[in-house]
Image 1 (spheres, helix red, strand yellow):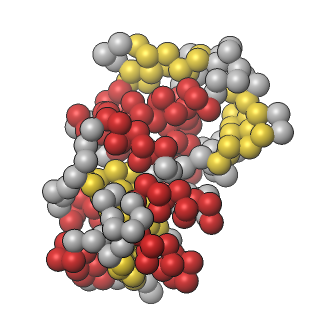
Image 2 (spheres, helix red, strand yellow):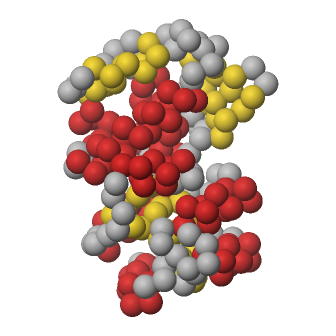
Length: 230
């Protein structure tokens, strides 16, 4: 039985082949494309469980491709592969709907671990997902961690698995500090600088999602972590 179906869009032919073969030896089914438009066409016919996308692609860049994929399936998990590591590039990636961001050069073991972690969060197999309650009342919002939805009046925001996990951690510790290292180790796997910048991007996104209720705040306790107050 196959682990999962992966749509891989990577224009570096040699790297793409290595990634494809590495996943296939671990019983994943991989469909590899070398440009963005072909990748979008492949997505509609392959029906993958997760997409692994390079950012710099011919014909359609990875960010645009991710947005098009999210129009078709808002819940599709996406991991970006990129040599770009500037904060604005990371922000653009997560705004496009990324669940994770793997910086080149990377080890195959790291990529495989991250793919499995995203799939586990998506399927609800992670220990944190199993412990999630059905609903949190966050001020005037209603947050459904298992469905990965944030409701405000009649509006519904579909969240990525990592956005949902981060908000869940903050809700579980309402009005109490959640240490940065704890968040990073639980949701990102380690507390490297790059992952810390990624987490900051997610915090910014959560603040944006919660902005309609001024009584709800995600407070930055400088150098220590974050606190959800409402």
